[in-house]
Image 1 (tube, rainbow, N blue to C red):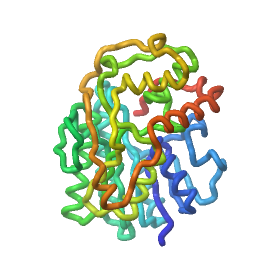
Image 2 (tube, rainbow, N blue to C red):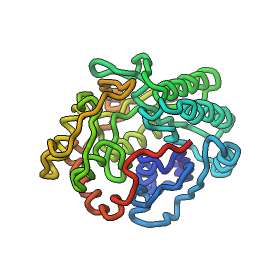
Image 3 (cartoon, one colour):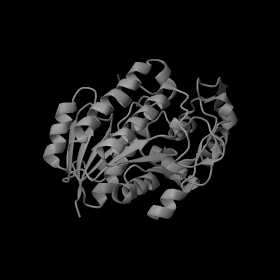
Length: 331
């Protein structure tokens, strides 16, 4: 078995957790990310050892360092490449949309045009997003039409469509995953679950867009890493796989659940704010395909995942309370 994997976007929440998953299984990992994290507390692959021997990290930006990235990949010759790199944050994409299109479309197209010429790649796994579907009704399958409502979603949809042209015309071995709302230990502090926990522990106010009526499915990062691993090894080129639980919850009910676990009254913390532009009220991913075809299942309940995340925040509170609580845009 080839034990080499290149991970682009390695210091993202999903990327760093997937690297941790791989290192525990003795894979050799080439990690590429445009920036180092503020602190190792956000990098699960450093929690057991600060310098894993089977990990090589390079700080490189897909917008600026494509030639260097290609050189490192050519030298490493991985059978698998998993790309988590993207300009994230849906609401902020309205402020400077050209940055989102540059990172999520233009630079990605340039990267893929280089990668398609490498003959050692068996599977290029592109970590996409359900935001490409827009707001939906019911539990949708992977064949659902794209209807993006924000610059972020439109940029991700454009990249997915571009990759399918490379698959159809160049036989580029791309597979896609789209995961529900991912959460867990090590997540950035501006995400809803970690942010709610910190508000409860530090006495800060929490603003809920539109009163928190939108509905989402939340899935623990360990289950997502397991699913990603299965798609990497067994996914069929040109296919998309949804990664989700079979349950959904409103953001308000989720926040109430977190405050209740902290033995706090949410009424003392929560403030309603206006709905953000282009927000999807609901999207629910039917994950029967990955369950039936790749024998995947989720194992961590929402309750257990929240408790684990609370424990992580409490354990690292002295460090976390000094970190930025809001998203900082990197152009």
